[in-house]
Image (cartoon, rainbow, N blue to C red; front, side, top):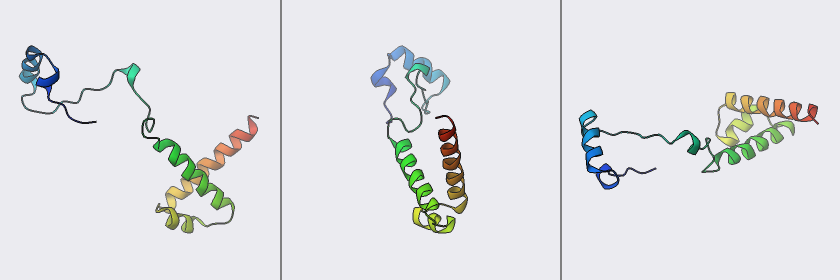
Length: 98
């Protein structure tokens, strides 16, 4: 998101009214609820992290240690443990619902 000058997009009277509240400051205007996107939806980061986490879990199951995985993926050992537990739970829930 980039900044846009209020006087280029808003009516002059509205800019003057806003200046009465915050003269020269920055104001964040949030999206309308119906236009909000979930985290990672636009950038596809969510999907990339899911692929990475599955790779970590796969390597863990193949015998890689938490320490090795932390070094390979530049994450803390605690993060690797959390990912492994999360994927383990997802696999258990997925197999019991089928």
